[in-house]
Length: 144
Image 1 (cartoon, rainbow, N blue to C red):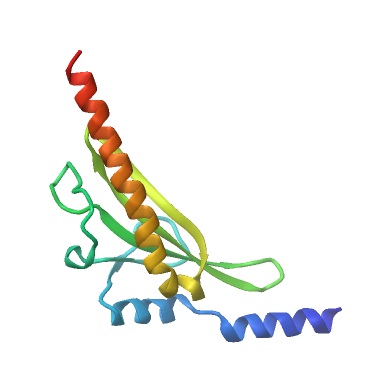
Image 2 (image 1 turned 45 degrees about the vertical axis):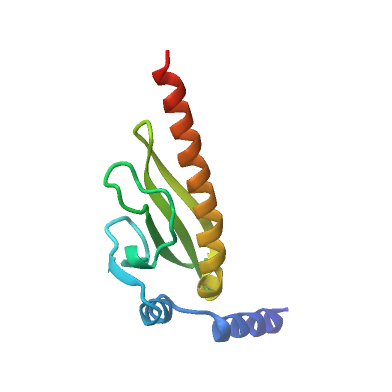
């Protein structure tokens, strides 16, 4: 049993992506990185420059597209196995002064790059729907 566990551990270690690997891959495709000030085992996060973001409704606080970031996380379990995951975040203010922080999380770090289009589509659709819904509820309340 121990031998099987070691085989699985080695196989996982061989195919995993480290935070450093991910950072290099993201910057190579145009993402920017900044120091992460939130408590985390990884000291950076990546953000998609404004000119590379889809045409979503603008954030009402600054009339610019909402921020779209990737936050990597790295863990070492008690048995010594390391695991990395990422969280995709789309954040901004919608009409009515409400701030949203939409997430797609617990994506294996090695799947991050191929998940970017899915995350952009899912979170972008949720953002646009919430923005429109918030705008309609503000419009309705103004008539009272």
